[in-house]
Image: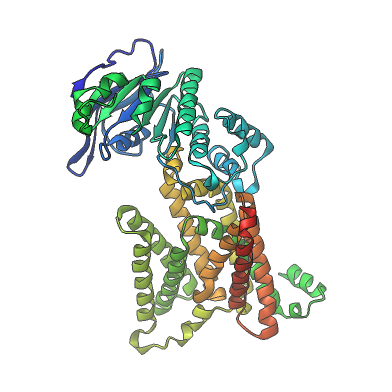
Length: 250
Length: 279
């Protein structure tokens, strides 16, 4: 493993600790001996080739995949506990004809009142406040299947931010989004992490945005092959080996 | 029932002067919301083929019940359908086969077992014909009572689980990340369909029952923009087709189930042409 910049000590900052994490299917390892610390306010980008185990890593953190090792969250003055996670899934696609409005989607996630009885005025106000965080109030009555890639990402981001999580996880948020949409989304994420001091963990295949936005990049290929600042990882030997780039990505 | 009979007799409608028509109308008024509500999630969850297979399993349950001389084979059918639904859900979760392949396997096995049991020892299949075609006009007050209880149970289930079911159907991964027990929700829903299908089979008939579970939701989906409209239109279409279908059956002496199914098909066609305007 090429360990470039390991944040081993957390001091007083809150921290997501991943220690000796391994995921197996049968007898073969999908992920092996992963060690990673993510501090509050940090944006960490997980990169790697297809099938490297990035999504599996996220699923393990989400509790959707069995693993061995430790995944814990620590805050100042508190014992380790399970973090509150906001999750934006990969390439979310909804049937265009599905009669589920954005308000319905929020109500299904946040309210005990059945969405088929209609969304109450109080819930509608709460949803509008959530959508305001992503500048998407005008989307509330649109059907989810008719949203563009960028609009859908913003809606799911707003959903993941209610309640405000300790860690925000995004699986390939930039796929299916145009260049303008990418910049808008990344600016929004940057603003959100500063406003709420939350950690952001995202997978991406788009390396061009990393130096500007990410604090830490982690190169995964079955295990962590390199980690550090985006510049360090993108110019590392491990990155060149995996992506067959002679001069690195920068 | 006395109040219902008095109410029907007070109406100046000729067909409601007959007790069997009063029973049939009440049964349809109870079945319509059942079909309308379940239909929304069957369509959203791409489960129309599955509900069809459940009808076949219900028939098999009735045949097994009859073979063992159970006084009310309907209960044997309910039990068999629930076991069928649970087994299917279990196998589907652990299998890498597509859902429609597994449904095909289960459905054909259920039908084959049903026919085998029904004709065992040279028995005649004729006595099972009523389960194929169905006859809502011969429904009894006790069966109507059972339908009312089922409707109440489904309404309670729907108020508690509709949000989870919707989220599970449109995006299971998102549902799971929000702490929704996806497997439990899906399993409870399949059990609910199994019970409703089985209790309706003698009234609506195996051959057309599934159309009543699919068409209200499918027609509603053509117009609805949100969950409230989706449920409202679906139940409304089921109610309108139920009442009109009974009237058609009375006037022309045909099967009520078939008439209801055809009216629903017409509603689907009509809404299909208007779907663009509500997009």
